[in-house]
Length: 126
Image (cartoon, rainbow, N blue to C red):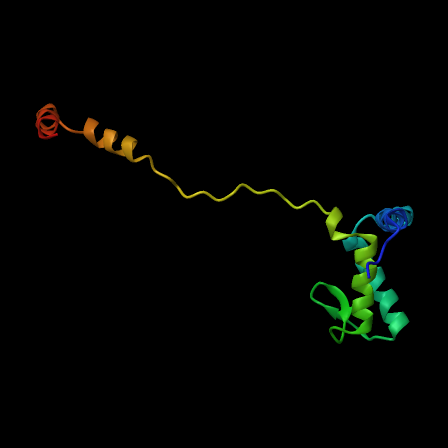
Protein backbone atom coordinates (compact mmCIF):
# COMPACT_ATOMS: atom_id res chain seq x y z
CA UNK A 1 0.00 0.00 0.00
CA UNK A 2 1.48 3.32 -1.04
CA UNK A 3 0.40 6.52 0.48
CA UNK A 4 0.08 9.46 -1.85
CA UNK A 5 0.56 13.01 -0.75
CA UNK A 6 -0.75 16.21 -2.18
CA UNK A 7 2.58 17.95 -2.70
CA UNK A 8 0.99 21.35 -3.20
CA UNK A 9 -0.77 21.11 0.17
CA UNK A 10 2.43 20.00 1.89
CA UNK A 11 4.40 22.79 0.21
CA UNK A 12 1.73 25.29 1.28
CA UNK A 13 2.30 24.25 4.89
CA UNK A 14 6.06 24.62 4.43
CA UNK A 15 5.60 28.07 2.87
CA UNK A 16 3.38 29.14 5.76
CA UNK A 17 5.89 27.87 8.30
CA UNK A 18 8.72 29.61 6.48
CA UNK A 19 6.87 32.93 6.46
CA UNK A 20 5.58 32.65 10.02
CA UNK A 21 8.88 33.23 11.81
CA UNK A 22 9.50 36.37 9.78
CA UNK A 23 5.99 37.52 10.61
CA UNK A 24 6.57 37.01 14.34
CA UNK A 25 9.93 38.77 14.18
CA UNK A 26 8.33 41.70 12.34
CA UNK A 27 5.60 41.94 14.97
CA UNK A 28 8.20 41.96 17.74
CA UNK A 29 10.20 44.59 15.88
CA UNK A 30 7.11 46.81 15.90
CA UNK A 31 7.16 46.46 19.70
CA UNK A 32 10.82 47.49 19.85
CA UNK A 33 12.35 44.01 20.14
CA UNK A 34 14.85 43.39 17.37
CA UNK A 35 16.77 40.30 18.48
CA UNK A 36 16.52 37.03 20.34
CA UNK A 37 18.63 38.48 23.16
CA UNK A 38 16.21 41.37 23.61
CA UNK A 39 13.20 39.02 23.54
CA UNK A 40 14.56 36.47 26.01
CA UNK A 41 13.74 38.34 29.26
CA UNK A 42 10.16 38.85 28.05
CA UNK A 43 9.89 35.20 27.03
CA UNK A 44 11.17 34.10 30.44
CA UNK A 45 8.64 36.18 32.35
CA UNK A 46 5.85 35.12 29.97
CA UNK A 47 6.69 31.43 30.45
CA UNK A 48 7.03 31.80 34.22
CA UNK A 49 3.59 33.39 34.46
CA UNK A 50 1.98 30.85 32.11
CA UNK A 51 3.51 27.77 33.77
CA UNK A 52 3.78 29.26 37.29
CA UNK A 53 7.54 28.73 37.39
CA UNK A 54 9.74 30.53 39.89
CA UNK A 55 12.47 32.88 38.68
CA UNK A 56 15.81 33.89 40.14
CA UNK A 57 18.49 36.43 39.31
CA UNK A 58 21.40 34.59 37.74
CA UNK A 59 24.79 35.75 36.53
CA UNK A 60 23.38 36.63 33.10
CA UNK A 61 20.02 37.99 34.22
CA UNK A 62 16.72 36.47 35.20
CA UNK A 63 16.42 32.71 34.79
CA UNK A 64 14.32 29.81 36.00
CA UNK A 65 14.95 28.29 39.43
CA UNK A 66 14.56 24.75 38.07
CA UNK A 67 16.05 23.59 34.78
CA UNK A 68 14.31 21.62 31.99
CA UNK A 69 10.81 22.57 33.10
CA UNK A 70 7.80 23.08 30.87
CA UNK A 71 8.28 26.83 31.28
CA UNK A 72 11.89 26.71 30.07
CA UNK A 73 10.93 24.48 27.12
CA UNK A 74 8.10 26.87 26.19
CA UNK A 75 10.46 29.85 26.39
CA UNK A 76 13.00 28.13 24.10
CA UNK A 77 10.26 27.02 21.71
CA UNK A 78 8.79 30.52 21.42
CA UNK A 79 12.21 32.10 20.87
CA UNK A 80 13.09 29.48 18.26
CA UNK A 81 9.86 30.16 16.36
CA UNK A 82 10.32 33.94 16.47
CA UNK A 83 14.07 33.93 15.85
CA UNK A 84 15.07 30.67 14.12
CA UNK A 85 18.73 29.77 14.37
CA UNK A 86 18.70 28.98 10.65
CA UNK A 87 18.37 32.72 10.00
CA UNK A 88 21.43 33.58 12.07
CA UNK A 89 24.55 33.95 9.97
CA UNK A 90 27.44 31.96 11.28
CA UNK A 91 30.69 33.87 11.39
CA UNK A 92 33.14 32.70 8.79
CA UNK A 93 36.59 32.33 10.20
CA UNK A 94 39.76 31.56 8.37
CA UNK A 95 40.73 27.93 8.51
CA UNK A 96 43.64 27.42 10.81
CA UNK A 97 46.80 26.62 8.97
CA UNK A 98 50.01 25.36 10.39
CA UNK A 99 52.98 27.61 10.03
CA UNK A 100 54.33 25.83 7.01
CA UNK A 101 57.96 26.51 6.27
CA UNK A 102 59.26 26.21 2.75
CA UNK A 103 62.10 23.74 3.17
CA UNK A 104 63.82 24.82 -0.05
CA UNK A 105 63.83 28.47 1.03
CA UNK A 106 65.17 27.44 4.40
CA UNK A 107 68.03 25.46 2.83
CA UNK A 108 68.78 28.26 0.35
CA UNK A 109 69.08 30.73 3.22
CA UNK A 110 71.52 28.41 4.98
CA UNK A 111 73.50 27.97 1.73
CA UNK A 112 73.78 31.73 1.28
CA UNK A 113 75.20 32.04 4.79
CA UNK A 114 78.14 29.81 3.86
CA UNK A 115 81.52 31.22 2.96
CA UNK A 116 82.86 30.88 -0.60
CA UNK A 117 85.12 27.97 0.42
CA UNK A 118 82.23 26.17 2.11
CA UNK A 119 79.99 26.71 -0.94
CA UNK A 120 82.63 25.18 -3.28
CA UNK A 121 83.11 22.21 -0.95
CA UNK A 122 79.36 21.71 -0.74
CA UNK A 123 78.91 21.85 -4.52
CA UNK A 124 81.71 19.30 -5.00
CA UNK A 125 80.02 16.94 -2.54
CA UNK A 126 76.72 16.80 -4.43
